[in-house]
Amino acid sequence: MIQPILQFGVPPYRLSGTVYGTLLNSAASLASLGDAVNAAPYKAAPKAPVLYVKPRNTLAVDGDQVAVPQSAGELQVGASLGLVVGRTACRVSEADALSYLAGYTVVIDFSVPHDSFYRPSVRFKALDGSCVIGPSVVPAHRIPDPDNLPISVYVDGTLAQSNSTAGMVRNAARLLADVTEFMTLAPGDILLLGVPGDTPNAKAGQSVAVEIEGVGRLENVLAKEEA
Image (tube, rainbow, N blue to C red; front, side, top):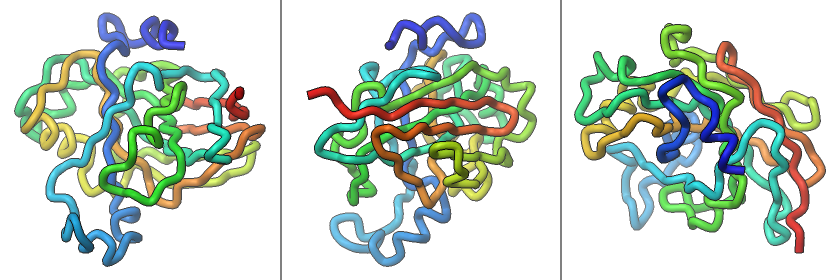
């Protein structure tokens, strides 16, 4: 499952680095939490990007079957634009941030539905084959405005979510600048812009497709986890 991921990309940038997800970057999702963001132990909305890692066991490609754990019953379908890093990025400015990208790709971040919005359990986010990437990387120069791309999610061919990359707390350039303020991103790393609000769920036996205009389309079938 991992090998195909390492074979496509924008030469010489291969998708062989680390995949970082971004939580609570959708303004609508953050607003929908209401007073919960002010409750203990956090007591305020995040002041910096909230990241998590999709490890190598999660990597999958277009057409791969995605297993639904028997204990879960269904998975959240997180559609996100993937920012593919093209050169080492450390403390980059917002004005220059997008020049550090090799390109953009579509990512479906499947996860077990959960209530913890700051620190979800690894077992909810790191399922085998739960990070579908592709089907290719579109060179950055072909996407003049990554912050206004329509995103469509289909479950069994029916539109389940219609949103866009607009309306993020941090747009692509700002997110890159803020993340590289405290950590270095390397060529081949992928930083997810974030998942829009109203994330749909899907069950075993259903097909899921995510399309980002100008970037590509992924389609996968969910199946029951083998005992």
